[in-house]
Image 1 (cartoon, rainbow, N blue to C red):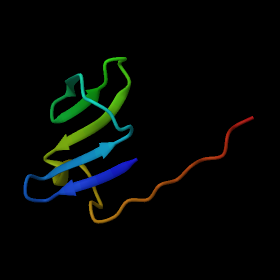
Image 2 (image 1 turned 180 degrees about the vertical axis):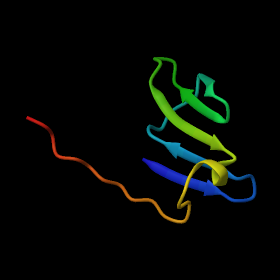
Image 3 (image 1 turned 90 degrees about the vertical axis):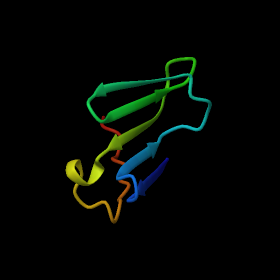
Image 4 (image 1 turned 30 degrees about the vertical axis):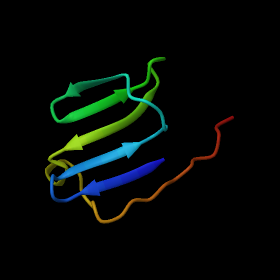
Length: 68
């Protein structure tokens, strides 16, 4: 997974899976999901990110333990 923020265009991009984007859908205004041909989510782009996300200077990845 990759998390990238571009302050010039104020966009936060989260790439979950590498692959060729088949389609993109703006489910919520300013939030664009990218899908491959099988419908798997490849990534998410958040436009005007500084207005929607706190702490764009750092990211923390937490993997929770599997629940029994």
